[in-house]
Amino acid sequence: MGDLLGVAVLGAGHMGADHIRRLDQVVSGARVAAVADPDLERAREAVAGMTGVSVHADPSAALDAPGVRAVLIASPGPAHEEALLACFARGLPVLCEKPMVPDSAGALRVAEAEARLGRRLAQIGFMRRYDAEYRRLKTLLDGGSLGRPLMLHCVHRNVSSPAGFTSAMLINSSASHEIDAARWLLAQEVTAVTALRPASSPGAPGDLIDPQLLLFETERGALVDVEVFVNSGFGYQVRCEAVCEAGSARIGDEHTMVVTSRGGAAQEVAQDYLVRFADAYDREVQAWVDATRRGRVTGPGVWDGYAASAVAEAGVRSLETGRRVAVDLAPRPNRP
Image (cartoon, rainbow, N blue to C red; front, side):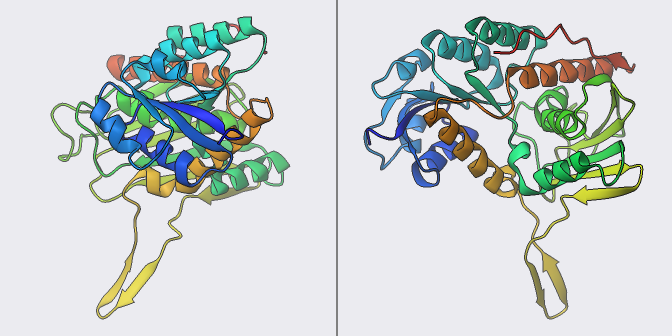
């Protein structure tokens, strides 16, 4: 166990528990050394059957636990800034789930804090960059055979939203993946956002504005539209189509099992992001572990986390005002 990367996992909820399982059963070269969650019973349940794992209510205690050499943050977004800064203060490499920090001011403080260190410590969990289909699309667009990308058409649907999910969270939580994917695929910053409100679905609880249609403008003239529908009722779907000068390319069509029997055929539809992107999460965490053991940090960084928060913030303002809102990015801190 001494040769394995000891990881402290902050948060043992839906995402955190899955990462704990992944580190224990899927990823090579790492082990869970400590877990922190305010619900100690939930934390103990997440590590049931594992040995050498300490459980804490206080995240700082987990960071300081014996054997911890790296940190995976899977706690709620508002807790991320404090956790990231605590990792930086200890010199601990960290993989932080999105959103890095929900508000852009806090996200910028994190980016500036890492810049002051003079070296990278944080990778941000935009796992679609590790999905096989997204990587193929990125390679195709970078190769230039289809010419300049003109538009991206994106779809993001969930079966249902969790309790307490707000209209703003459709943008700063759900659509944050599309924000990062658009920036990454196009290699451009988003400069303005317009949020539109279709008639809300009867399946949307309370006053939740669902679905929403987001329009992103980019610095070199590409347009990105994103349908976000978190109470579709039927499945988890993510699709992206790039429309270019000389052709188009689409990913996300369901390539799953089709069962044919008397009277018809039925195709499986994923019900959860942990199912649809299981391989991407595995690749992401394995890449992080491998790089960390070599003393390196790769993948999306704190600027990507900040930019996503700034774009999302503009989107929320557009949703509230009904107007197009420009994205105001701060000057980029010197890169570590």
